[in-house]
Image (cartoon, rainbow, N blue to C red; front, side, top):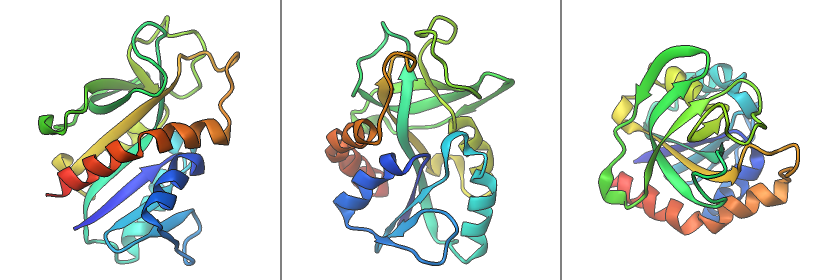
Length: 196
C-alpha cells in the first residue's frame, strides 16, 4: 500500500526522509523522495504550486497511492496548546471561503483531534482573531486531492510550532526539523496503523 506524504517545507520533510531512509527522485521539478511504500513531496508554503505538482505526480503514473498524509507545522492561539503538541485534523476551514472539509480521522490512533483554519498570510496576532490551529495549506490540499483520492484516505497531521507570534519568535530550519523529529515515533505509529 503506497502512502504519499505532502509537506510544505523541506524542514518538515527531512526528518521523515532521514527516518525512513528515502531516496531522492531525480525526475521531478519539485522535492520528491521515495521508498518501497512511502513517498514524500514538498509543495512549498501556501500551496501555490500544489495543483501543478500534484497534476504532474499523478500524470506520471503514480496512480497506486492509497493514502495521502499532509504532515507539517501549525500555529495556534497562546492559551490553547503547547509548542510540540501534535494533532490529527478532523475539520478544515478557510478564512476566505465558507466551504468546510470534514475529515474522518480514525479515533483508534490515540492522537487528539483538532480543527484547523487555512490562512493566506502569516498570522502574528497571538491567536486573537482565529482560534484553534492555523496553517497555510490544509484547505487547498483537501480541494486538490478530492479529485484524486477518496476523502477517507486523506489525513492531516499537524505539530504546533508557534503561538502566532512569529514577529517575536522566528522559526528556523532547525526548529522545524526538531519539532517533526520529536514526533517521528508518533508519525511512524500513525502511518503503520492507518495502513492496516
